[in-house]
Image 1 (cartoon, rainbow, N blue to C red):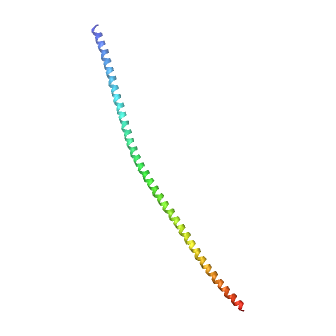
Image 2: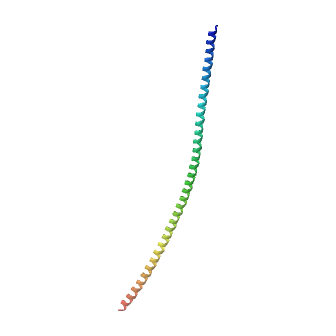
Length: 127
């Protein structure tokens, strides 16, 4: 081969090495860029997961608090029902007592009227 042929061959080899070297570096740069995107996405996912965990804990606390309030309200409802029943029974007893008092008064009035009638009939029988 002559000198020009060797130069051409050398240029072709150098070009091939440069192209392959450039391609290799481009591929490595692209791989680094993809890796950076993956790491950024992973970081965002971790942040989102941490926020979701915090929200989950908050919601669990709120649910526990609301359940506690419900139990408290149930206790209050039971107390009010018991008081209502007690008042109803007391009112029933009071009403019964009032009826008995009215009955006693009416019986006394009846006896008094019967005594008056008896007295007047005695007076009439003597006339």
